[in-house]
Image 1 (cartoon, rainbow, N blue to C red):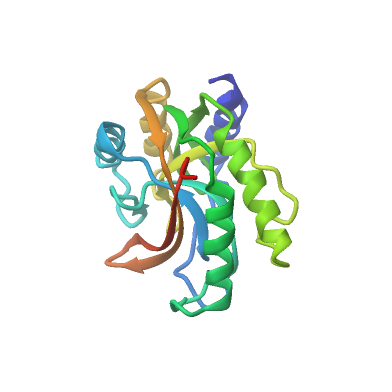
Image 2: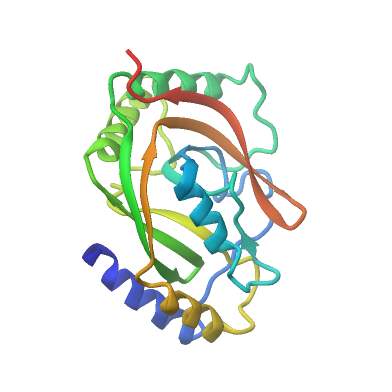
Length: 222
């Protein structure tokens, strides 16, 4: 878990110093919460994640439920309220993801340790193989070969995680959030096997974020 030690220290310091940030409700063209490529855990690990998220006292913020918990592979585009089935970019994302996922085995990721950060709370992901890194690279190549770039613009993802909370407004009691994270800093939720990559969009409804699946690509299928 050493790769998250510095991240956790900086996240605690930011919240306690009053430097929290927060998301706004989605609007057309916003840089955040656009379509993304993700992988969602399932089974007992998902049960534990959802149960853990349910213990966070964060009224007014976006605490994520079972179907929202995910590992982001790549952020794809600014926010759009509608991405219909015939949308040209959606077709590119679908085909590129299918190409990237072909013959790539499911990703094994240990989800262990909780960390605050300026915009929320996450569970740290510790890959047990190179699948996420390979899938990230293959998807980028498949997108580029089709003449499309995503929002990552050269950023290399070297930290994987599942967000439990995104702050949706100023923090009334940052110490409570930090104390909760400290109490769960060493929690081990187990080994997740991520066997399906998806193209999804995000929707804000009933004061919480929902994930709407658009396309999917099972890993390891020839």
